[in-house]
Image 1 (cartoon, rainbow, N blue to C red):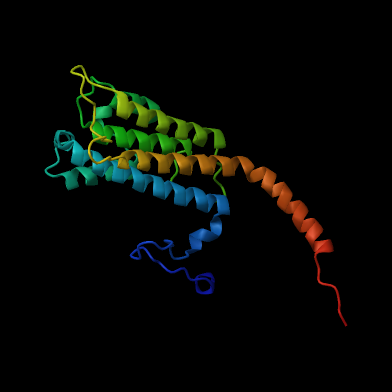
Image 2: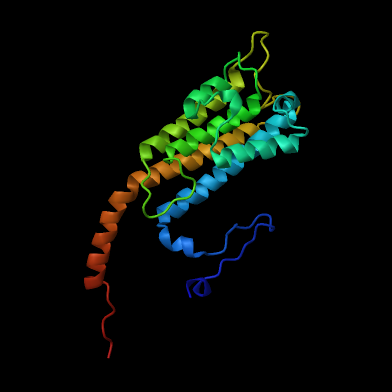
Length: 229
């Protein structure tokens, strides 16, 4: 019955239009904040996959370290590790910020792209209590999500500035040449912006609940139409 009441048009193929998804019964178990957190998480993981693809293209030596036959296979392996939350062998059971530190260590010899992107995803997911989809029973901590945003900022800065023993960047990313390429910086900015917005919304949640209660209370008494006949 509910799926028949509301229909959302999926416009993913239409460039420049709002993208929406079909309503499901699972949506009934989500508050507005739950839905926002779910959509933000989906968008942040997509941003990380785009970053991985860009980094692999600029640093092809890295995906070859993974044992994959092609870059596409390396991307498939990375996506499976992130979505399965099972970790990476070269990170030796390290997770979230500890794994992030290891991935940016000049002494690290494994697939640095996979380690870096997996660690970022694990840091973000850990800040969301290990979940990627959120329902009424889930409680998110605004401070942890705010901290995750700062960790992404730090990671982006270290990626751009840290060098190996020979003075070369650990990974080639943004490039300032005849044509300015800051696509990596923009993708990092999107992730940070989504996390900050969600943290602010979570911090406002209880205050807005109280305001909404008062508005409904007064609206029920004073905002009714008056008779004209």
